[in-house]
Length: 110
Image (cartoon, rainbow, N blue to C red; front, side):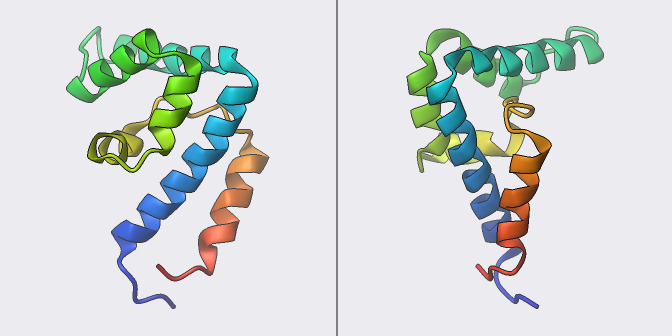
């Protein structure tokens, strides 16, 4: 059992997921539309209320190119690290891809 920092482990997993997501976005830029659709759905669910973090993501998805988005989500900037916790880019990775990344981190102590 790991005695490492659980937040660091979660951050490492989220970064690994975002690296795989970034690779798919670079190969298929149209996948950004999945993130935009997720944000629209989340806002509808909240009766149109836009959470500040969702507004930040909307700006990123609407104003950056897919390549810039891919670079951003794998960057180590404080903003990227913070927004990684609430990514709307879920659904870009298949369930199999996501589970493979999660399983690869199961036994890794951070």
